[in-house]
Length: 80
Image (tube, rainbow, N blue to C red; front, side):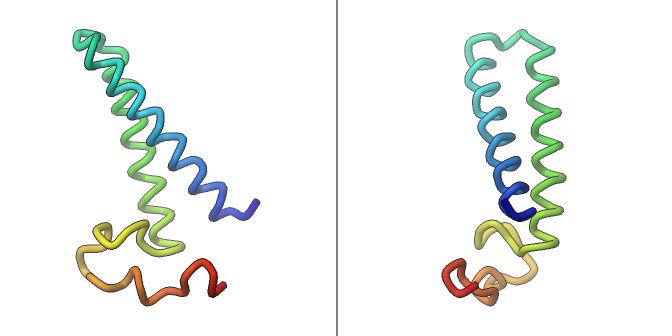
């Protein structure tokens, strides 16, 4: 597994964990520990996404506000 794939797998795991925590907090809104854990996941995901985008480009067309079309200038997955 490449470093890029490892990073993407970690990003997806963090996004899943955040969604799961969000669903839990819908039914347990007073659980401050769960809210803190979700915030920890959010920060970790944000940092990893920033690192990923610095190395491999934006994850989608909305991530890079400075260059609207940057996501199409890189090779497509089937071109590499």
